Length: 284
Ligand code: AMP
Ligand code: FE
Ligand code: FE
Ligand code: ZN
Image 1 (cartoon, protein in one colour):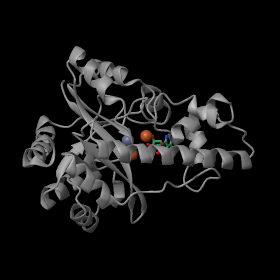
Image 2 (cartoon, rainbow, N blue to C red):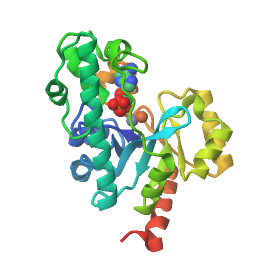
Image 3 (cartoon, protein in one colour):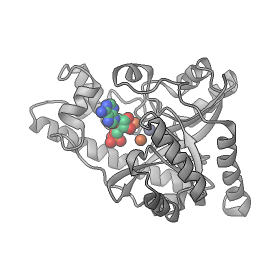
């Protein structure tokens, strides 16, 4: 059965598989469309798209931004992003630099907690340019400080744990404005219980275009509620597995590729908005 998964990660950020392999595995899982949505980078998109022409998978250029929310950190998916826009590239480069600085601090705090992990050991786990906590988690597993990824987050890296370091987050409106300016479309990722009507009205007022309705963290009731609210509020819909690799799907109970898809109409609606934005002449 064909389908579209609009939330996937590769080694360009914290996924376990190279961009071309994500596409191969997507084809094998029966998908005809994916959005590659790595954290703070578009660097996997070109290789993924090239593989897509081989395997018959359409690859939508995406990224997952971290932005400030009233409750702390919120994730915002960007779709139909240009890979060669200078302003977007500069913004993403700044975010990645901040990730590297944050990782230095995570490593310092790990040392204080009695775990002598080096920044290099963390960087060795990263295949791309966007460093994240999963790389530290994998280095902790490799160094046999913990038994698995989940334990790494529970003991050291998760919120409130000894090596937790918050991100310096850009404002939501600054990011939605930037994405609009370059012709892209945004979707508020995995809102879970934060997806109440007043919260969604505020997101819409801040320039968010869509809601990630389908996600492994959304049970059927949550999915139905977000779907209804999106329709009521005139927001578009997206969804996907938030896949980071088959191993983690097994270990951390995350979704396997091909298990969460969205209908072609959802993709077409997101793309139509992208086309309207590029036709207006704000992007060449
Ligand atoms: P960061 O962007 O560096 O804060 O890392 C966040 C990423 O860590 C998420 O996108 C997930 O890929 C991963 N993550 C968060 N919590 C867990 C967990 N409990 N187990 C495994 N991976 C996690
Ligand atoms: Fe991630
Ligand atoms: Fe996320
Ligand atoms: Zn994600």
